[in-house]
Amino acid sequence: MLSGNTKSRESIQEPRFDYYNHEVPDIDLSDCEFPHVIEIYDFPQEFRTEDLLRVFCSYQKKGFDIKWVDDTHALGVFSSPITARDALGIKHTMVKIRPLSQATRAAKAKARAYAEFLQPAKERPETSAALARRLVISALGVRSKQSKTQREAELKKLQEARERKRLEAKQREDIWEGRDQSTV
Image 1 (cartoon, rainbow, N blue to C red):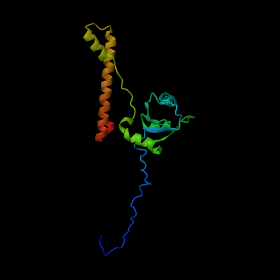
Image 2 (spheres, rainbow, N blue to C red):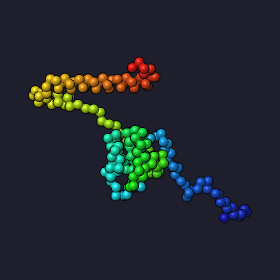
Image 3 (cartoon, rainbow, N blue to C red):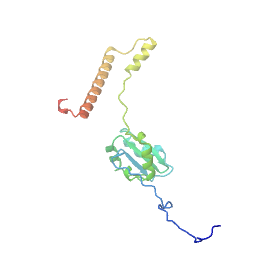
Image 4 (cartoon, rainbow, N blue to C red):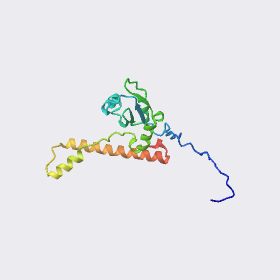
């Protein structure tokens, strides 16, 4: 034992941070980040996907999908922000609806985590059975039972679709490049 200076030096230092009362900051989602997504909440735990789809049946054809958050919360993904805004006006006795910016922390976290899967639902493009028919007929080595007028009508329809697709691509490019649209 050392002799001489026998003062006891006790020093209590206050912590800089209060870890017991730490709160996770709220996930900030603005209205413009996912304007085509809404939160569906306060519905019975027994509800299944089919039940929620039935509530939003009028939006099925326009493009609508459901992503589950938990037993009483889900995200409704629409094809456009306008459709989502329209759906916010729905009054239903079994479900409540609000914009994603006002959603629960869990719903916002799910939206952030699955952002790539929450892209607006798109309609399937027009298709034609002409190519499939041609491939099957040539593979089997049989003659087509389609009349000449039917083949010509199908060919014309395909050409019109190609031309429409080309025009849409040109318009997108013109808009992107800032060219005058009145000359189109």
